[in-house]
Image 1 (cartoon, one colour):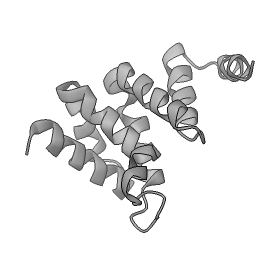
Image 2 (tube, one colour; image 1 turned 90 degrees about the vertical axis):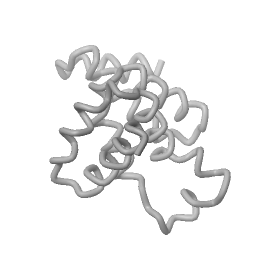
Image 3 (cartoon, one colour; image 1 turned 60 degrees about the vertical axis):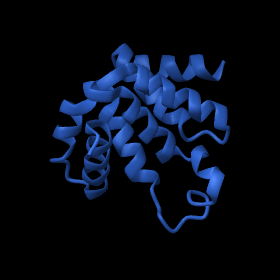
Image 4 (cartoon, rainbow, N blue to C red; image 1 turned 180 degrees about the vertical axis):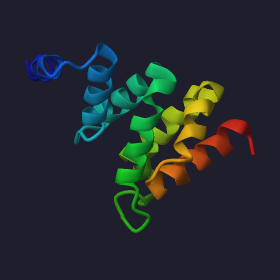
Length: 124
């Protein structure tokens, strides 16, 4: 019921299907449930390069190197930024144009993670 309400709400706002899906997945990345976060990251990965800006923003918003939640060993795989970065890497070379564009973003965090993703994808 909640998912249908959210999707309908986005549709009323006049958002396109891809925009609705993107906003839904980004919202689910904030879930308290690891499985929902992992499913959301997989959904964004399947969207391909058009989801790159949303993934980079998610990483930049959530990244805090001093946070024990992020850096507590095995739990890092549960964090939003980790799942989003894995989704970016999984897109492979198809994400490169969008990542290069993100290097010009005003947010230094977005620029940093775009550069990092580019290095990983290009095997540097």
